Length: 317
Length: 219
Image (cartoon, rainbow over all chains, first blue to last red; front, side, top):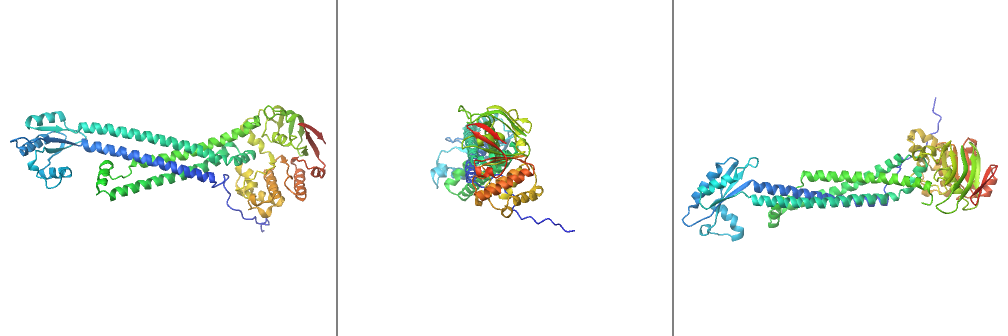
C-alpha cells in the first residue's frame, strides 16, 4: 500500500525566535568587545606589575653584599678572602663570591667610561653572598662576625631596599587593582545599559510572544541565550585583541632587548611574557561579561512583561 | 464562556471609556462588535483578551475571575483565545510558516508534530503557495490571513479579530469573512470588531454596538 498523503513543501530550518543580527545587537557586541579589551589589558597590566614586583623583591632578597672600603696600607685582597670565608661558614649561605677587579671595572664602566685604572682609585670592593631564601642566615650575627674580624667591612643585607620595594610593589598593585575594579565596574554598567538599549528594539517580539501564550520563563530564555552569545562573542573578541597586544609587546621587548631602552624595560618587567594569572583574569572577564549580559537580558524581559501586565491594571501608564 | 457584569474601564483619571457593560459570549456563537471610531471597541477587545483589566465590575473568562487571576496563569488562559490584531503583529524575520507555527512552538511542540497542521491551515486561508515568504513582501490581505492562521493554529475556543478587513479590498474582505463563518461552523466562537456595515450585512449574527462607552445588544 502506498502513502497517499501529498508531499509537503520544503521549509528552511526554523528561524530563531529572537531576530538575529540586528543593528542594536551588533553595536552591543562591538561595545562589549571594546570594554572587554580595556578590562583585559588592565588585568594583564596588573598581573605583569604584580609578577615583576615579586621578581624584584625575590632577586634583591636572594643576595647580600659585604663591602670593604680601602685604606692606607690596608691589604684589601686578604680582607676580601677573610670576609668571604666568614660569610660562607654561616648556615643559609649558598655561595660567597668576591667581585674581582675586572668585574668591578665592568660595573663602573657605564658611569666612569672605559680604560679605567681601578687600582688608582680608592674604590670599595664587594663580596656577593647568595642566600638560601627558604632559610636565610642570621644577618645580625654575620654582620657582627665580619665587622669584628675584618677592618673596614660592612654587611648590607639589602633589607632597606627590599622593604622599599615591597612597599612600592604593594602600592603599585593596589592602585592597579583599583583601576581594574573601576574598569570592570564601567564594563558591567556599559553591558547593562547597552543590553537594555538593544533589548528595547525587541519589545514588540516580547509582546507578541506574551500575547500568543508564551510563559515569561520561556521568553526570557530565548533572549537570554541570544544575548549570552552576543556577550560571549564580544568579550572573546576583546580578550583575543588584548592577548594579541600582549604577544606583540612581548615580541617587541625581545627584539629590543639589546638596546638601552630594552634593557631598562627588561630590568623592570622581565620579558613581558603574559603571566598565567592574567589568563585566569581574562577568562574571568569573559565569563563575567557573558553572564552579566544574559542576566541583564533576563531582567529586562521579566521587567517588560511586568510592565505589559501593569498596563492591564492601569492603561494610562 | 465569557461573562461581563457591569464592567467599567477608565484610563487614568479621565472619564470612563466603557460604562456598565454587561453581556455574555456563549460557546460557538458569532457576533460583530461595532460602533463609531473611539467608541471603545479595541478597549473591549483588550478586556476580552486580558491585556487590560477593568476598573470596576466583574469579568469571567472560562469560569475564571480575571481580576483575581494570578499573572502566571494568564498565558495558559490566553492559549484558549485566538487574537487577530489590527496591525497583524507578525514577526518579520520569520516566514509565514514559522509565524503561523509560533503559538505551537512556544508551547514546546516540535515541527514534526505541527508541520502538516500548519500547511493544511495555510492552504485553508489560501496561502499554501507562499509558506516560505517573509511578511514584508506580503500584501495587507495576505498578512491579515497569516495573522488569522496564527490565531487559529492551536484551535482556540474563541477568536477575537480587531478590524480584520480594515486593510483589504471588498473582495478580500468577503473572503476573510467566509473564513470566519466556516471557522464558526467548526465550533469556534467568533467576535469581530468592525465598523464596516457592508461586512456585517453579509452574516446574520448578533451585533454588539458600542456608543459613548455603553453597549447595546441586537440579537
